[in-house]
Length: 463
Image (tube, rainbow, N blue to C red; front, side):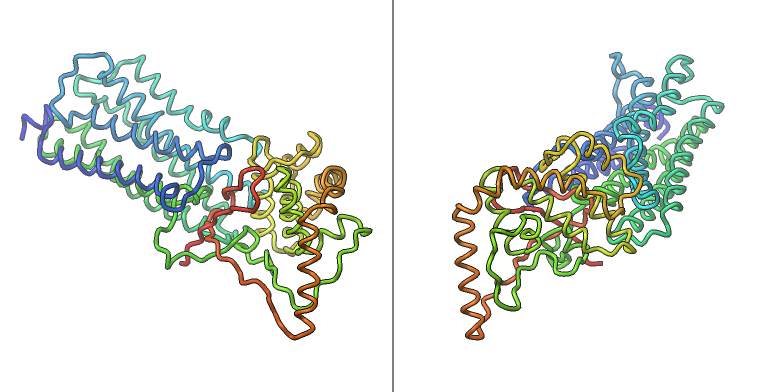
């Protein structure tokens, strides 16, 4: 045991490597299944890059531990095998530091959205480098001072700042969770934050203890072997649990593959329980469409709005009508229900207002910035200026052509048919279509521009 404790290659080492390899396979499988099983299209923009960085950080963390803690009998002949590269950089800033920073940023966004009721003042791609800056400082200091011995162990005086940094990042997660504890989330965010804290504190506690024992007691063979096992086994559990527990990106980080646990919805408004969301069930005869009525009044009719939306989609210009429909659904949410209004407003901003969104609408820069820099996402007039601008565009570019289109002809025919059927006491109201709904309130997948119908996919787990 003494020889393998020094050189690596103990049976427990290979068991730990097998556990880490299995966790990597499960991690990659879990990240790919939403696209393979649920046919979710790859979406550009948003914060999907945080999830991808989380996967990269997980791989860096596991590989760096294997390379720096002598799990296998590998002779270090090349510069890229040096302890300072793996133990200093890949295990710190690009491993654990990057993994925890991604989670903290996700939690930070929740805090600003639901407590401050505004978008975070700092973009994620700016906040992330700031979050891992302490790790970079520690890694640079270790690289300059060269405190590591040939076995990649550091003196006791270096353990205090390294261990303190691990504890500090967990403490930040606890503080953010405490800040949102009073919010009545509609989905699973707070529960996932609590799970994240429980998992991270437990696993990191075991990992830090193993790390200290491995660094300090170099001459005790059995302690070196056992602590080395936990040094790799605990991060394997951590990365898998972190990716399984969603915070603000559950669509791509966790989808229930058990159909019996999925409640089906068609739109974001239905997922939030907005009354009469997306339902085209007619209680009586449809009134005739008066072409002399202003377009904004005609669009209040769900039947007309759906017909006009289909026409706009066929002209590859449906973003404005989809946006109007979403804002109309938002107006149904009571002002007092601030949480639901934040969910819906954030959904609209992410999919229609943010530059580069799949359904980005054509509004002025001033109006776009007013929405993005708002101090209250629940304000009832948040999207009024954008709606007014888009209404003028729809009147100019779409309305005149719609009245002479087949879509309007079909709407007139359908209205007259429903009137006749109602006179005879018949009801040909369409059955509700079932579209699975994701538990992600922030990043639903949007249809490609010009698609004939909406293709949002939501998955809400029934707990």
